[in-house]
Length: 348
Image (cartoon, rainbow, N blue to C red):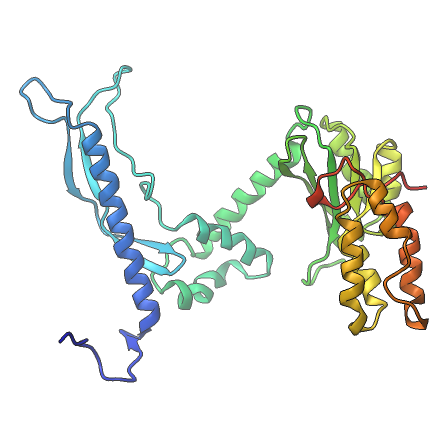
């Protein structure tokens, strides 16, 4: 009979760390080691036939590298990556070299951990607090979290953002764009500042982030500055622009791209209607609104809109006014993909 040998029942820590976390770290370490060994074995097998003049293999194992700490989502693990001695010479005279795609040289943290760092920075975590804040999750030996390294990363992010702001847009077209102003819950010198965001969809359905700029509230002048800069960099007028009821963007759109059609986005529209209803009626009204939202053709959408609202009575007078305005603001179009809502007529 098999038995499990271990600590006494109720003891849930190993070396001061919870057993569950330690199991996850050890499992991740073993899987990474196995993947690295498989990668090296495949490389050796692919070049096993290549020999020198004396018949010796040109590609052989070369022991293991120095132990290094790698920070991944389940914590920090110690890894000895296998090495390869590749004595082949390429056509350009350069020595061939094996480079692991799983764990490249000098990698100290996984890309996913790297993606979390700018999010935490934007959330207000100061550069000197990263190591202390993440030590409990990633381990005290987590690499790349010093104040100096975080400051270096912020400089790299700023450089990438400036390049993003200056890139040319003349080589692409956007069928429609989504716009919104994002307000953050952080203390700023001016509480009216927000971030103006635009996302576009290309003719093949690819979504792209077009612009992320600072703005004053969601004013028309702030949006004009954004749209004029996009136009200056070669962006052509999109067919449809989708946004909420903030008037600043629509005024700017009429000035910069007057031929672009406008549509109120469904998220805000549904929220505005449902907010005026008792909670018990909201599921029925939401289902009726979805019939309009997902109509296959403009005519089907109009029929769903012009039909009687899903409920009547004094409590639904205000949402009925929203309902009656939908043909003008959120009229579906048979030319719009089903998962994007619907295309609206020109605003008047």
